[in-house]
Length: 370
Image 1 (cartoon, rainbow, N blue to C red):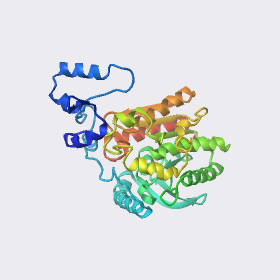
Image 2: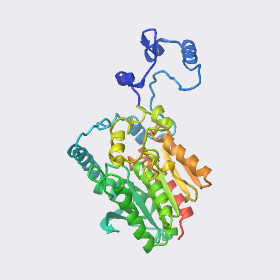
Image 3: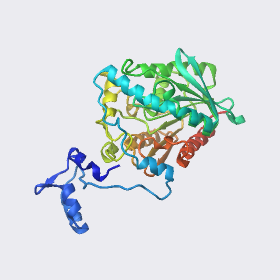
Image 4: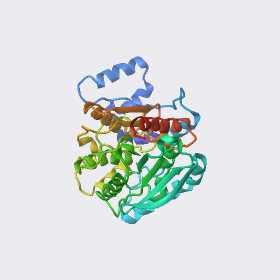
């Protein structure tokens, strides 16, 4: 979220200088009528749009207090982390993992789910099982690929989203603990995910299977369908790529519009872009298995996407939705007011969290066979 304390950061926003003062400084002293004239002049030609600096308050209408607290929170301290060595990356990854793991017991207790470790296709996984599974879900299985920019969320640290999907939706979930950089760049994560998928489709009817994940997990969900189709494997009956990192490069309107507004990812030029390059490891960023927006979506299963109005990946999600629709795919899009990246899963007690996962569960219920 943009605040007065970010005035120094505005230098990096390439604000136009007019009469020895930045446009942002000029805007603060202008009346509305003066501002309309200066903005009209600045945007008088076709091409890039220029806007004055803004301060955006918390949304209040139809946004719960719990979600407002997330929306109004300061930037995470690691948003501009710049690890230079594998050891520095691992220190950052481990530090964040410990924070995530510390909250797991409370989530498990609240949602009534059990977790056990296993190996599927030679890949370390977690089986998340709700204590109560509705009769219609007893033969259904969800495959979870976690988020974290391809670097965060090793081991149990990746479980919160899988716990919420199992708890709120009443499904058994397989959460894949795929390999990640700095030790294992592309294609290790995708190879692990596909090894699990190949095993599961031999053991289960693919019409009762779905894949879901958020951010990185959303991109991997899409890429898994592309690879499954390319490798002539059965496809899932439905998918739920939440705010997918569908274009790993800084391409898309909201990479600029929501930069410094999204208080989760903040900017592609922080740790996020550095993780993208670390993961790609020299592979073309437009490779559809890395940036699935460049793949062919024809024949994809029904898809539900989730994002927020302040999400840095809003355009990633919108572009994915439109491309799916243009390919003739059933595709739903849920957009939450005021939310930054993936905030619909940050607080298990927020009403919006239950709403988001319940919507996904209902979508899966509609398209998965019993």
